[in-house]
Amino acid sequence: MTFIVQANSYKPGEGSFTVTKSTRKDALETAVGLLGQGMTGVTIMGDGRTYTTPEFAEILKDIEEGVKRVKNIVSDLRSFSHPNTDMMEEVKVAEVAATALRFLGNELKDRVQIHQQISEDLMIEANKNKMTQVFVNLLQNASDAMKTKPYANETPAISIEGRIEDGRTVVAIRDNGPGIDPANVDKIFDPFFTTRDVGEGMGLGLSICYRIVEECGGRINVRTEPGRFAEFLLVFPRKT
Ligand SMILES: Nc1ncnc2c1ncn2[C@@H]1O[C@H](COP(=O)(O)OP(=O)(O)OP(=O)(O)O)[C@@H](O)[C@H]1O
Ligand SMILES: [Mg+2]
Image (cartoon, rainbow, N blue to C red; front, side):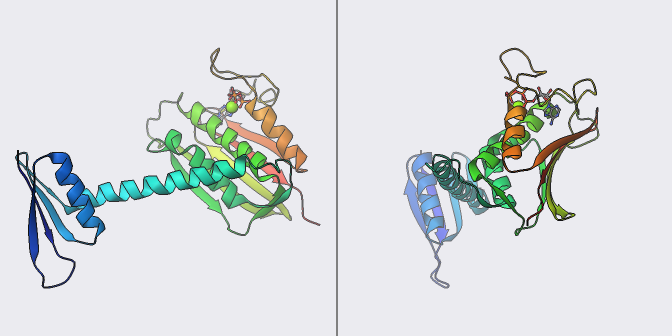
């Protein structure tokens, strides 16, 4: 089999050139390499098909994003395993949300729309790793619950909003999933309370969130309407 890779030089007026490869993989590697060097109009012909630049550009973008994601995860993991695990510090809410979303990237990707509205300067006094755990638990719960709702005329969506109210920092994590049965609302923060199947949930996520938020002097509340939404509100004390 012969594959012909064609590309235009990145220097204007230098024209195009052609390389021949004998496997699809070699041709693709060559094409991606040429794109990486700034060549344009890269085309592969062979296999009875013609592949053109936009398709490679997509592949390149995916690779680049993948590398970025891995970099971020490694740096998140590093700070997660930092020895100073109990340290309280000024933490950027937007950063905690971004880290938590990265942890759940694959879980939510393509399935749930995320709306974020947190101003960059919104800060709380907290332990960063523990607060990340709170966000991860809440987002994971939302994601799990949403899997049980048959979305008919709605798009599955989670919103994360951060704002100042009466001098207090309020973060609201809301999903348009099935909501919580009124009979259970008072129990969900209890350790080992779960509505999930045996072996699926320990019922510990929210009790851990409750304790962590309390350690920062904050409170966690829930508002819900069955069939419509569940919203977890984190309220952090007024700064003195
Ligand atoms: N966003 C949500 N929408 C609907 N129900 C929720 C939501 N978040 C929590 N719940 C309810 O609260 C219960 C307790 O949540 P919690 O996070 O403590 O435990 P879990 O998710 O069941 O298990 P674990 O977190 O230990 O894996 C859940 O089983 C579920 O019934
Ligand atoms: Mg949970």
